[in-house]
Every structure is written in C-alpha cells, then in structure tokens.
Amino acid sequence: MLINYEEYRMMYEAEEKLWWYRILHEKVLKEIQKRFHENKQIKILDAGCGTGGLMSFLIKHGYHNTQGFDYSPDAVSFCKERNLNVQQTDITNFDNVFVMETFDVIVNDDVVYQFDNLTITKIFHTFQLILKLDGIIITNNNAFNIFYGTHDIAVGGKQRFKLSDFKDIFLNLNLKIIYHTYWSLLLSPLILLVRLFQQLQLKLNLIDVNKIKSDVSVPSGFINTLFYRVVKFEERFFKKGFFGSSLFLVLRKKV
Ligand SMILES: C[S@@+](CC[C@H](N)C(=O)[O-])C[C@H]1O[C@@H](n2cnc3c(N)ncnc32)[C@H](O)[C@@H]1O
Image (cartoon, helix red, strand yellow):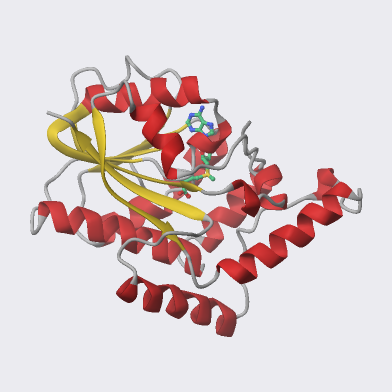
C-alpha cells in the first residue's frame, strides 16, 4: 500500500528536523564512514527513498554518487524538488532496472514492513545481485509487535520485526548480518505507553481508522531536542541496543 499525498508532504517537511530522522540519517552516515573512510566516490542506492531526505543528507556530506527510487509518483516528485537523481521503480520487481550497475552501499529504510517474507526475500535477493563484493546493505525497520500503533496503520504496515525474523529471511541468501542494534532503548517506555494506549483505543473502536495519521510530525523544539539528545546519549553507552521500536541492520555478502 502506498501512503497518501499528505503523508509524503509531512515526510518531506519533517525529514531534516525530526529527531527520529536525524538519528537514523546519522546512523547510516556513520556506518558508511566506518566502512569506506574518506572515499566519497562510492555508489549509493536508496531503495524506497521516500521524499529523499536521506539522499540530500548524504549529498551534503559529499556523497554525490547517490541515486534512489520509489514507487510513489508523489515521493518521486518531492525528490525532484530536492534535485535528486530518483526514478519511479517498484521494489518488488526491479531485477531488470540496474542490470549493468553495482553499488557500494544499498540503503533500504522502513520499506519492507509492508510485504510478506517471500517478497522481502525476493527484494534482498535482488539487492544481493547489484551489491559489490565488498559492499554493504543498510536497512532500518520497525521492531517488536508490542510497539504496534496507529502509525503502522497510517503507513500500511504488515509486520514488525525481530532480529530472528531477518535471520530467517536471509537464511537462503548470500548475505550475513555484520551489525545490528535496536533503538531507542531509553525512549521505549514512553513510546510503549503511547502505543499501548492506541492499541486499547483501537480495540474499543474509539479511533476513526480513516483519519489516522503517521507519527511523522515535528514536536515542539524542546521535546524534539530532548529526544534527539536522549538517543545520542544512549548510543554512547549501548553500541548494540537490545530493545526498541526500530531495528537497524548492516549486511554484507557471505563470500
Ligand atoms: C515509511 S516510507 C520510508 C521512506 C524512506 N526510506 C525513509 O526512510 O524516509 C516507505 C516508502 O516505501 C515506498 N514504497 C512502498 N511500496 C513500494 C514499492 N513497491 N516499491 C518502491 N517503494 C515503495 C513508499 O512510497 C514510501 O516512500
């Protein structure tokens, strides 16, 4: 399911400010820098790039060889407003799109939650075909069913993941997980409280599902900065978080 225009507009406006996006983009950048050091010529693909916030961020950090795709014409047109190299492509059927191309980094953030495991396996199989031998795949996804809430409905979520789910998905692929972390541990109690309340409201039919919006909106400056700092603080102490509403993975080819 694709998200409606209003959600893409919210995403476009929030991407550079919202604590959650800032943390995610910085996590992606850190992994790229860790593995490719000063090399800014590497080829990066953002698969399911949304409105292009991550691509813009990477380009600002000197990674000009960055391209992306998304299936939504709205997402693609927001990317074009940012002058990004983006095309409209379906991630469930893109085997023939990048035939002669290989990438050093493929990013796939928060896209596969809307597919079943068979489709996810097919997607990662295609990633594997277009990934360089020493390349990496970075993928962030929503985690743990207990965090299910109205956001999942708004973005057409089919599932939330645990590390073991991805291990099963990658079992028959030539990919291995080289780093994983759940995040944010410290904000989990608060997020959990909100989501459990939403689950109760949904059960009691107190929410009109047609009017649900995603969590992609920027809170007050104080809260936004506070949440950002809490996660930054947590990152210093937990290199590998063991609980949180998101699961961040880095993959490599097995051979
Ligand atoms: C939650 S957004 C994440 C966007 C971006 N990766 C980010 O981190 O902000 C999910 C994205 O998946 C895209 N999408 C959904 N189905 C798709 C498909 N079949 N092929 C490519 N992109 C798809 C949506 O249009 C949307 O932009």
